[in-house]
Structures are given as C-alpha cells and as structure tokens.
Amino acid sequence: PLHAACCYEAPLEVVAAVLQVWPDAVKEKDRRGYSPLHCACRSRASLQATTLLLNTWLGYKENTTKSQIMALQPLQGEDFYFTGDVEVLFSHLFALCNNNTDNHYPKETIDYFIRIELWNGVTL
Image (cartoon, rainbow, N blue to C red; front, top):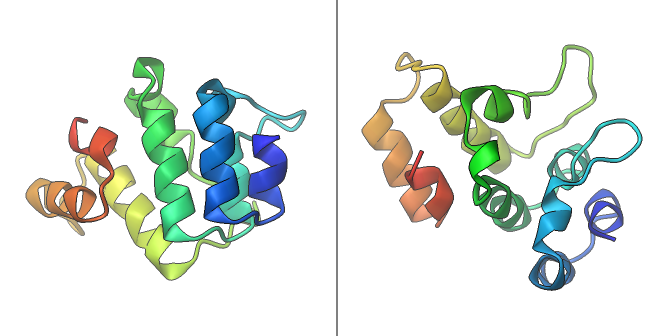
C-alpha cells in the first residue's frame, strides 16, 4: 500500500496514515528493488511527504549507515526527477555522508534538518 501511495502521488495524509499503521512498510522493496522513498522521489513527491518517509526510514538503525544512505542516490541513467526542495534535502544528506563540505558545512546541514523537522537526520 505504501509503494502505491508513493508511486501514484497520494496526498500527504494518505502516506502518513499508511505509515502510522504500518511503519515497517517504509523498509519494504518492490520487485525492482525500490523502496517507497524511491517511488516518492520518482513521482516528484512533495518535500513534506519525502521528509516524512525519510524521517521514518532513518528511524531504523540499520538505515543510518553511510552505505544505506548512499544507496538512496539514483543510479546513473535512472529517471529520478527531484523537485527543487527535495533535491536540496538529498544534497544535504549525501554531503553529510560523504564528508563533502564543498557545498554544505555540517552545521548548515544540521540547521537545515532542524528547520524541515528531519529529526532522525539531525542524529546522524
């Protein structure tokens, strides 16, 4: 159900309702290996929906490793079309994991996570 909600641009309230009754759904993968978070990004979900999914996903300790986070990056040639604000979110996340301070300083990233209420991102 969460994959369908994310792939077909369900309203934030629907995504939140599914996550409330089945939070583990955020970790499920479809037959192509995509998580609901991947589906949301592919369908250009709002920053709020993406933040909710990412915050829930990061709530699982096994997803807080650099390798798991970097696996969220689209593979070369994949048709991910981030909206501008979601692209900023992921650029902060990936820069933090890569220790890449060329574009974002860690304090700037943490301040950004706090501003958008990505609480599980703050603890990385």
